[in-house]
Length: 483
Length: 95
Image 1 (spheres, rainbow over the protein chains, first blue to last red):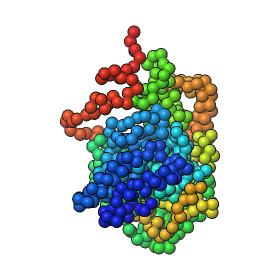
Image 2 (image 1 turned 45 degrees about the vertical axis):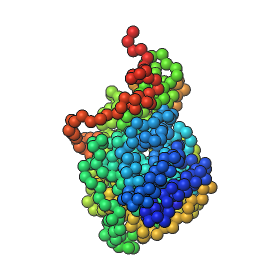
Image 3 (image 1 turned 180 degrees about the vertical axis):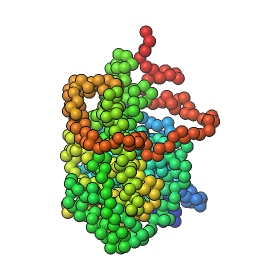
Image 4 (image 1 turned 30 degrees about the horizontal axis):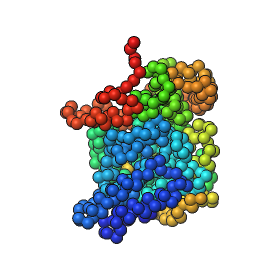
């Protein structure tokens, strides 16, 4: 599949019809998704109807949206009126939302073509997409490895050419981590840049919607389409999104790259470390300034996150009660057993674990020791970044400590899985923008991702730096082998 | 910190999650390991540090209190596992 920008150009200039583009994407899904399993629901009819409308606009010479005719995949925790929205959970298996998420509405208004809803860790809780209640998604680069998570379906769909771009959500790394493991660009905008209305809530002070693309330009284009204030999300900021695409090219020589020593310590795979350092070296050779910085709170990020996120989740997931929507147990005597059994039968093990952890940390007698302390550490993490950004424009390092790991390797040990997010959770705790951009392949042919983090609401600089890496590295990644 | 089966049972009850006896044991072990890891936060001096509950730190975002169309009733009810006319059905709460 071609890049989104080129596809739109071809559709607009009548080189190809949007319907042909949609059919090609659907053919590709039919051919490779039985192996990859990126999609929970494929929306072929929706895609073809949307594509036909685009073609009609082209014929009539009407103005086209910025994603006209572009096949887009949507993570299945974003509400869509045309397709069930399951969150990869048994509890929402048949849920058909009565409204669209704001980001979905914006994609629609941009004339995008929806090819399907993608797999995720149940309620976006996980780092491998193995926690889906339905099936695990496989990494297109090596089918017995995970694609990362929780937005693993969206990442795999883009990596395998089943969609040009995709939407994911990122609460502690859920866009950037699978981006790194699948050789795609995954961008988490600043908290507040994109509306969360219609994103099924997990950790409301952490969640943010963002795009995947095969190029920084496609991710920037999609980010621009979905950004902006929304009266339906009071945490979205009342300022217009800047022109990401127009300002994307920026000389490497004007960038100060902060390199935290804590990101290159124990636990980091040697090949990943070497690849990321080499990429930084390439930009420095083009005149970028390398600044050694320190983020001493890095080692506390996971611990603080695994209090804050489960606490918010335990509160957000209280709404699944078997009454208003979602799964209801067959076996109940009274209203309490209706709630308790519906929830027990409807939620998978990781979701249950996090609800219990969060409820525990918020319960009387433990609140101060856990939740309150974690929030104070969260402040210290934010102050770490403030100090570092006084000396640099962006912070760069690895996105993930290792390349993709085999399916099943970490599923028995929740804590080992949590530690995957060591470089990504702090971004969410501080509300900053972050992106993962491919920087190489391991000897065994698995993608490696480099992460760029920036100041709050300086999404543009993050995208510019990611584009500078992409431009100067000039990687020409092959298509994943699908074997 | 060690977390016992009784604590998990109590917390699960607070969260309205009816766990099977064998689940209690497993979750107690896993949560204990996670809390042991989280205990590293105790090493940090956080006295005088203001808690940060939300990155935006905005308060009281108001909008005009104007009536606008809301979800039509059939739409609001269409996903209910059990309904009767315009109502959600639950087991009898008051004898």
